[in-house]
Image (tube, rainbow, N blue to C red; front, top):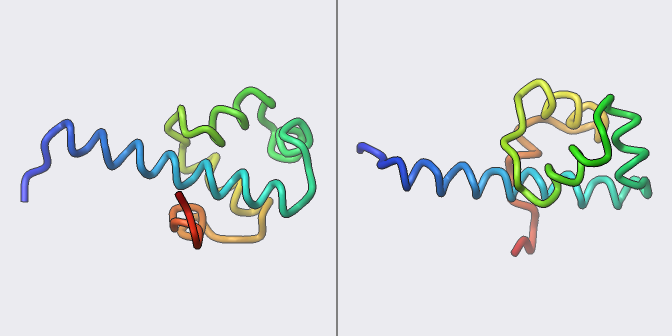
Length: 85
């Protein structure tokens, strides 16, 4: 099965949205602000915001740091949350 650029881009956007939603849900569950999560992970608040809205493609290194912060795996960050949009 050959994927087109459009199909590949769609999958990328879906994954970005899933990661973003998981980051937001876990941050809220930890009861921390975007600024506090940024401090914990060594990133900026703006970067955390971009991740949460799914507007950037997060590196594996960043996902590993986020997963460790949330005490989960990278696979957990890539799994659609229950009841997701």
